[in-house]
Length: 79
Image 1: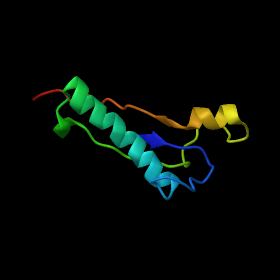
Image 2: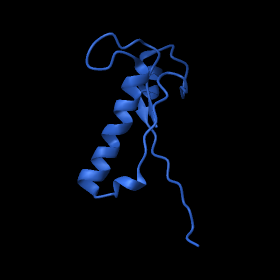
Image 3: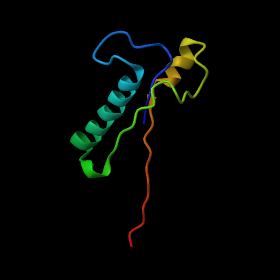
């Protein structure tokens, strides 16, 4: 799950915070697949942009906390 702060991303390859958040999530998936050899069929990415902040976006410290990727592990027992 990719996340951003609430400041619009007005530069670079991502025209919106939503696309930036997806890019963050995908970069983690690529790392897990290419470096840790996690099967790509077991991975998925989602981007939430600035819509799920951990902290209010009222300071640089809080904005930094909101720029993140969460790794969610889902356990599905066999059988």
